Image 1 (cartoon, rainbow, N blue to C red):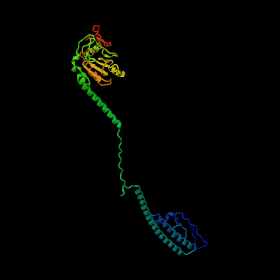
Image 2 (image 1 turned 180 degrees about the horizontal axis):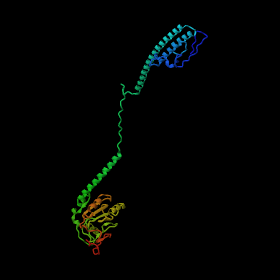
Image 3 (image 1 turned 120 degrees about the vertical axis):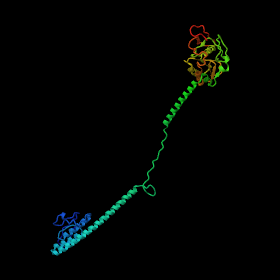
Image 4 (image 1 turned 180 degrees about the vertical axis):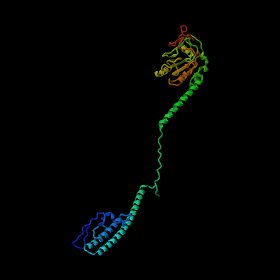
Length: 366
């Protein structure tokens, strides 16, 4: 800023405030009186420096400083330039000293204000920080306070049915095997007579009518009370019973002799459907002590015979067929150990019995 004196023509040079304090004339910057500068405030230092500059201006030098010090300095400088006495300079110096003291007080006041402002600023900052912290914390309820922890929600997962089904299947299979084994042990522990007696629908002629079970060898045709016959007098030659499936009727006299050896003879109506015949044949073919042939005039589609036993069923899928074979094949023999594979046997068909007792080789006819 520019300062002009009342002298009119004489103008003092302009002083530009740069924010940096100029040292008094004739003194280096580091010799400035530091006693007037408070140790804890930069504002006091600036004010004291202004006062000092004002005092120096009383000696007739231009300085920059506080407003009070500058005015005194300007006034003192004007007087000094007009050639006034040293007393005027002394007064000016005194005024400058007063300005220095006033600057120091002013600086102290500013320092106090700065501290107060700093305190207020710190309080405001803490208040703002507290407000933000409070805003960031959600109250756990209407009464405020920290948020309660959230209890984890247990999600129930569905059952894994794959392993359950597997274990169930394995358990059922194991139970079935154990059950079958127990049944087999039980069955094997029973006599064949008991197993035969447990077959539903079976007829035991050994108990019902033993008279039909005579055992004489007779040539020619023989009349039987039970048809197909389950025993009685018979031809000396037996029908081969090595799992043979005959497609035509065979002589009763030769077949009864095979029953005496322990064979099971399966007969069926000639009009039995082919698939049923094939199922029966699959149970017979290739198995010793079994034979099969059609038999006209049956009152049931299928009839099974062993010596002294008979079972009639309606179709080849009946499970009792296998039970009959299992219980009575060889077991019902009246001549245990006599085979169907060798000896005096025949494979002829028809109704006329064949007597091959004089044929060489093989076991004599029974």
